[in-house]
Amino acid sequence: MDPSDIMKNDRSHKYDSQSKERHIPSIEVLKNYGNSGKDYIHVVVGENVKHPNSLQHQIQWIELYARTKMQNTIQIGRVNFAPGTSPDALFRLIYFGKYREFCALAYCNIHGLWQNCIEIREELRLTAGCRREKCLQEGFGV
Ligand SMILES: [Fe+2]
Image (cartoon, rainbow, N blue to C red; front, side):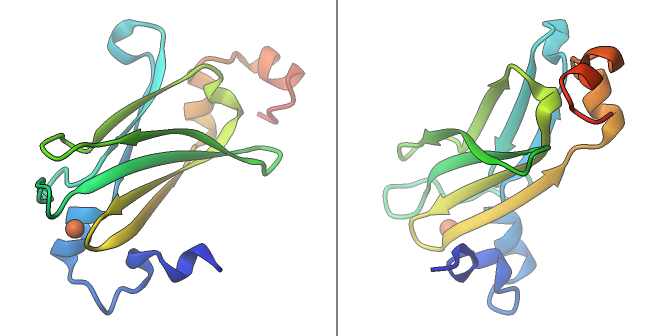
C-alpha cells in the first residue's frame, strides 16, 4: 500500500481549510533553543485551529522522520498522547547538519493520518551546529 492512500491531506477535495488547519502538523526548527546550544524540532497539531481533545476524538500520536543527504529516511521519534493531552512534541537533534528534510505524521482517531514536510535551507544548516570546514569533512556538501 502506498502511504499516500491513507494521507488525508492529499485528498484536498474532501476536507475544508479549517479541517486541514486542525489536523496538519506544523513543524518548527528551534536552533540553539533558549541559548542552550541544543537544536530541536517542534511539532504541533492544531496550533491555530484547535483540534478536539477527548476520548472520542483526539490526536493519538505524532511521528517525526528525517531524510539525510544520502536520501536515507530515518524515524527520529514518536510521541503518544492520552485524551486531555495537547498534541505538542519536542524532538532534540544531536547532528542537525546531516538532515535535509523533516516530515511529521499525525494520527487522528476519527480523521486518520496527516502529513507535513519541511526542507532545510543551506544557511540554516550551516548556522545550526556544523562549521563549514567540519561539514565538508563529514560530507554534508555545503
Ligand atoms: Fe480529527
